[in-house]
Length: 607
Image (cartoon, rainbow, N blue to C red; front, side):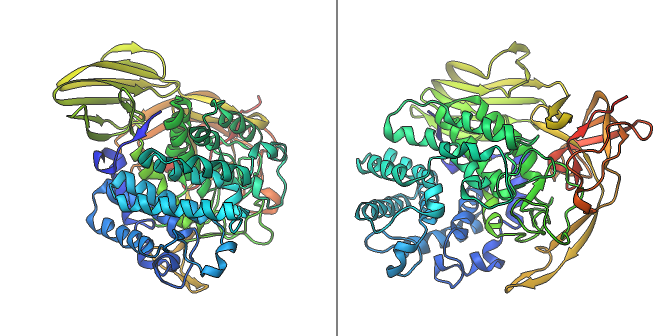
């Protein structure tokens, strides 16, 4: 339905550009310099990991480099991409493994590197990369037909990821073999509809069909597949998300999984890979279906869960984040997580597993890349974020630039420019729940569609306002929200820097590990439904705990809460009582994404 523009046509602006620069200067922008699994990867002839980590890293690093127009980063990205393409075998095989072990190689990494190459090829204009991905997927088809490659493990449960590069290749080259490969993949791949009964009662046991990253990825399966099958789209994504969310949802739109489905408890965790993969699924679902609800969910996750999972300088990240997170330390004894270890919610280089270290970098660049999309009628302004587009429509140079601080502010200016008269539709998406005015006039619906002849410069002002509110959660808990922003009580953190070497991988500043112990009270309930909003300037660090751009004043009273199973840095799932232990006072709530430690879900005080 909608297509992405090239990287060169899009220029992030405002706070989004600053966030991308912070990422480029942090961990995701420097893994090739200091992390062995990327720096010395078998993908470029080294002796370290030769499976998913370099493809994961490139999946975020490539769009980041090109969107920032950073020549050094572009050169570093091309070094990896060219090395991978140079290593492709004559028959099309591209993954780094001995020829005799191809049958044992889990082809999930093949799907991922083909996606990286195809997206780079089409959005950065490298025809060789597109041809390379096409030959790799043709080789996969031949091997599957011959029975020398069969989907198993991750490849079986992520088969639909191959449809993304396959769709790009079909659009570009218009061949006939792509539909056949898509059918082969579906035939051997897992059908998640077969496992929905397993999602309703989480258990302390690792299972691939309750793995949270797989589930965040699989939502786009039907939308991707119907392009090849010609079947009618039935919105299976919504049905599956509803089941997942009912039994495992969080206040910020995530599905709890640490690392498998973990229920609705606010101290359950969600793996960072699942955050960025849910974002990508939402981006693909919106582009393929045009349904604005996926852009709404994308905003919810992007403005809350994504920034909360990294330090402000983006040199450290969590594996698991919690809605009610009062501490992030190396926990003693048995881990409280469903299947993860005792360091999972620490911030650092690679807490628990390195998959998130490699993968989390796709979040912000792909969000920026999806601010504008191309429609059959013209341009879709999908996200009201500061960004500029320069493209051509019917041979006429046109542009759209958005200025504003959304979601921290509600006033955006859309400047449309055309070198000479040209007709096209500009569709501006309006976030769910917003009262909207365009140029002072109230508007309704999810899209404002302006189909006209444009010439010169036209300025449009969009004003959005939201009503702050307390929204319900399971077990009679509540959370504060304002539009797409979830607001929570920040907890003062006492930081401890941990520098060490493990398995030959060094942690040292600026990529050290950190423990955060609680340094302020956290056991409260809402004493009133009232939330008084205030707004400040968006600083150089957009998601700043010390200078948050949005705040809410809330009345809280202390309650008896307690800790989970005797831990002293993990809150119990729910309070022991909901009666006030003292007088209510005013406390300042800030955006979830600005916090390191937080309380998000609280009870209402029983009088």
